[in-house]
Length: 465
Image (tube, rainbow, N blue to C red; front, side, top):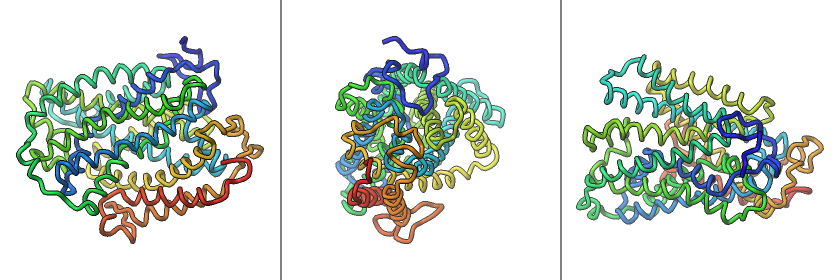
């Protein structure tokens, strides 16, 4: 299908948060698969697998906990209304929260995405700096740090700036390139698996070990992308089968994420410090022969940049959904100023600040989980988005969805309070974050369930979900 003038590869996408019209739909389900495949190739998936095992689990329990990766089914379901309406996720959220009531969830989504894109920029910069050292012998210095940051952010932000069609082309290419390189690196790591130690690991507590580990996987995979799903399906034909959209999104994400986390589980026997290492990329490099250092580090950088591209693109959609009226490409410039400034501060002035920053972002994730629950119930009520009147999402006070939808806002607030009360981070610990809730992401899941229950039991508002 020919790309329309509004969304052509290597040119700036003209559409913003508006609904994509039928004449502009040129994407395929295969595009969706490769976009999500590339986004989940990050080598840091190995670390998440090791974190699972750090809860004192046996090999069987550790592998079973990875079933949490199928939380990507939720992303697949959230992606369907993108094809039905042509609107991005946080604009679709207006059907539940109202055109004004949705501003706060959209801003939370934006801050969260900008924050994580900053964290990824920092980690990828360190990896690229190490690659420069391995390839050219350049010692780490402020100059090589800034050079590495410029290269990483140049790729991520330029692709997001150009927009959807370019993003699909680049992500598809990166999926092939870094997919092959990741398999190559994984093959070199497999001989280091300590099978004897793994098979003799004792079983841990199903309540205090397995359940928190499962929650970590859910929060670190599907739940971390809930506010972005429809952003990558709104150029699909409106009549595309919902099952194909769900399958492409789910399997595109699950295949790389599960494979990397499973390898992380298996490496735990020989690398028990991987879960807590300050420099996990360097620790993994210690297992590899010297000649593979540069390809390995470039793979680590590239696999992180693929996720960062999507963070930058979707953060722009969230900012536009918050009723900030600027062209889409300018949202990327706003992100660039904030992310690069924060990255330079962390890299050059306050390297220890990144742990505190990640704790802050974790707290923000506690707000997105209850939002996702409300959004899920709203989608079920609209038959997966088929009942959404897309034009009404943009009409403000005259919209059938209203300006403030208090049932959704109340359900979100109740779930947020519950989520934070049971959440424990280095920055803040809720009064109920003890026992099984301490050091896990079960608080997020509990907030999700509470918000879903409150909103589902509340009578559907007149004229909407």
